[in-house]
Length: 324
Image 1 (cartoon, rainbow, N blue to C red):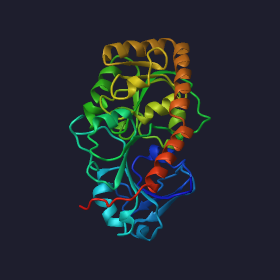
Image 2 (cartoon, rainbow, N blue to C red):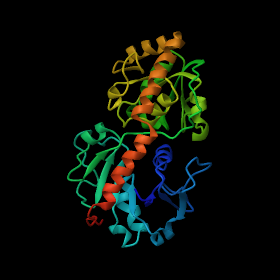
Image 3 (tube, helix red, strand yellow):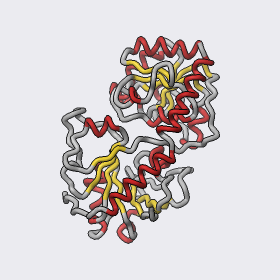
Image 4 (cartoon, one colour):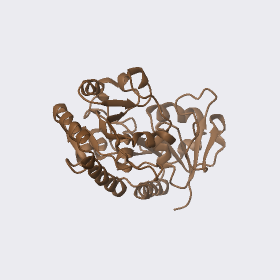
């Protein structure tokens, strides 16, 4: 397809790095205060050079083809602050990263009644649980863009959790389960504000995966979320996964093949001990996890899916978007 000029806000750095592997002209709005969505490429970015920063007050001068939202604020506020009247009529996609709140089945999506916006979910579970209304909806499963030279080592006899602000996010992110499990076996956490709860702290994305590769397994304590990118990243480097059997994960992790999933914390602790005591088995499962990650969550498939959806959206008749 032809190269598009796409406006996207910087919301999720890891996902942004992956989606911008699609070779289009990507524009990231910036503001001096670096408020939410306006940090541009970020510090020491690994994104391609065709991902460009543009001051927010100059966005209205861009010749754009597509607007890509990722948060209610992008959709409800930001677009009306920085886009021109002409740009407001352009094709639009809302990329939904999250499971619905406050209720998993009775939450209506913010764009459900807007005929001018197409909706992309990152998992089938997300699309199933959101009330999408009449919005054209798609599913494009995750991928990650990480250094292909990183390999699982697993020499640390310890598990690792990778979650930003685990304590603040509480039971939804499984903070209570993390606290319970780390009293029973070696387990630590990496991510924003993790040092405050005795963890490793935040590590730049460029270096995160080499550090991650040292640990025996990745534990995902998420009770309710989309499919965590940390799981895909760990699988991609050849690491076994231990996780709650919730949301999309039961369709990804097969017990004793890629790791273990269960809704019983006691059973998961037993399986973690097994991996700590059996490094060869951990490596075997990690190799199977990598095969699955490269086939189901590979970048080529991801870019192909995104190009297909973007082409369909930009060539469809444009309907007027709702106004606040």
